[in-house]
Structures are given as C-alpha cells and as structure tokens.
Image (cartoon, rainbow, N blue to C red; front, side, top):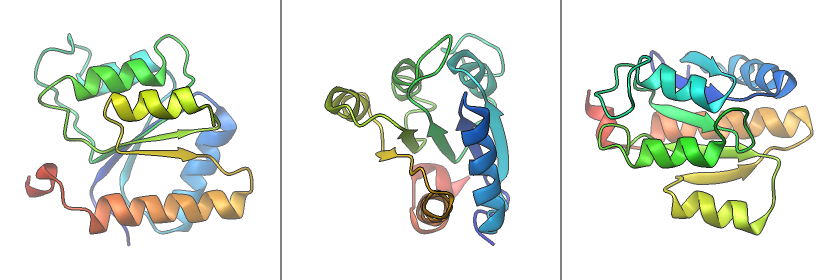
Amino acid sequence: MIGNNKTILLVEDNKNDELLAIRALKKNNVTSNIFIARDGVEAINYIFNGTADNKLPLNLPELILLDLNLPKLNGLEVLKRLKNNEATAQIPIVMMTSSTEESDIKSSYALGANSYIRKPVDFGDFSSLISNLATYWLVLNRSPNSFH
C-alpha cells in the first residue's frame, strides 16, 4: 500500500481527469486520504480552513497535484500563495496539466513547483504516472513535513 494515512489534495476542475486520477490511485493501491478541490479558491479554502491564507493552515496535505487551468483562481496563483506562505512552502506541489507551453513550465518552476508533468491521454500511461508520483512523493521522498 502506498501513502498509508497520508493526504493528497487533487486540484482538478475536469471531472473526467478527476475520476481518472482517483481510479488510478485506487488501482495502484494508494491508500491516502484524497481530497478534491475543483477550483483554486476551493483549494486555498481547504488548506487554510476557510480563513485568510496568512493564518496557520489546518489541513496540510503531504502532496498537492495541481492543475494549471482552473476557474476562479488559476493554478499558478494557488502555487504562488502556497509557496509564499511559510507554513505551506514545503509541501510538494506537482503541476499536472495538459499545457506544454514553455511559459507555463517556466512560470511554474519560478513560483516553486516541485515538478511539472503533462497529463497523458492514455489511461494506462496516466495510471502509471499516478502510481510513480505517489510512490516517489509519499514513500521515497523525505521532506521536512515527513517528521510530523
């Protein structure tokens, strides 16, 4: 079992991609708590428990899978807010998007993304990607948040 009792925040506005990600996580025995935010505001509200994002967050995930093109508050703005907050700056954030625009990739890394991955179209490839991400970020990787 991968990521036992750890929390993943999936920020995805496309229902099909959301379902594919959840299905891939389950298929690969990722037993983490998976929370879904369907726009950038919902993601910020989840992490900061509906309070202003300068207060101490209450719901810290061990991994955030963040789409780039989101309604209300785009992925880059969410990334910027999280990486500029001392309490959330260390959370691994993987940008998962269909965009291959060089400017999106550069902006993501400039704002502190830990990884930038283009979503595969094929479910088998998508499932494998999700499994690899979960294994790396929730099992193999050691972060300051690993010691809670």
